[in-house]
Amino acid sequence: MSPFPTQMSDHWAIQPGAGPQTRQLMWPITLGTDQAIIELAREAHRRLTGIAGLDLVPPRWLHLTTLTSGPADDIASDALAAMIEEAQHLLAAIAPITITVGRVLYHPRAVMLDAGPAEPFQPVIEAVRAATRKAGRSTALYHDPWRPHITLAYSNTSRPAAPVIEALGRNLPARQVTIRSVSLVTQSPRQRWTWDRITDLPLAAAESQRQ
Image (cartoon, rainbow, N blue to C red; front, side, top):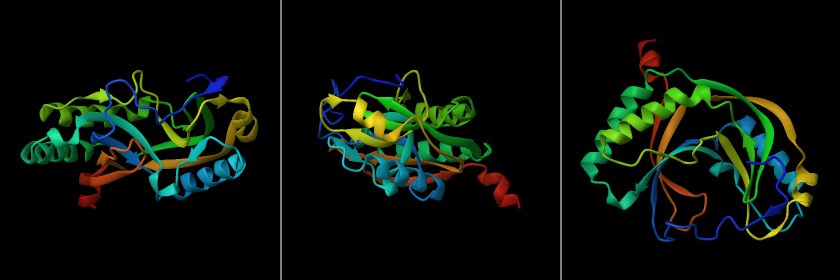
């Protein structure tokens, strides 16, 4: 992810191996109710107002994706239930993660907030991977190497990147965010950011239940 791409391209162009009608099973950290993230997104969108060629992500769909686990229609209901049960058990032993966000990342197909470093997320990644592997599903990271990020806007055309970079800059006001849960969703087959939520699994659930 270069901090300064010179050209932007269409994020919605069909990528190799991805069919437009295939719903994907995914493990995101959904952030559409986190007020700090919402405020940052609104500030970013304000700065980007009037710049053509960008699809701004509505606050309710803000998220950080960890794993993709293959086509959603291919998993049997008992395997899905077993995967959720195992993930719930493993995630309950992991403490919430507090990170500082505000640094802007630029990709040729998107504008994002850096949500790193990646190290604090590793127990979460391993828990979700273990549960997914137990169900016989793909444990592919959303990007490899994986870098935690929150997408603010997607490019929908080919265009120079400079106006976007000049409008948004390198940083938004820094905010602390605490990650308290992981979600399992089916992503829209339209390759948009929308999804159908299957479940939310809290971190440190066992500890909170003892209190």
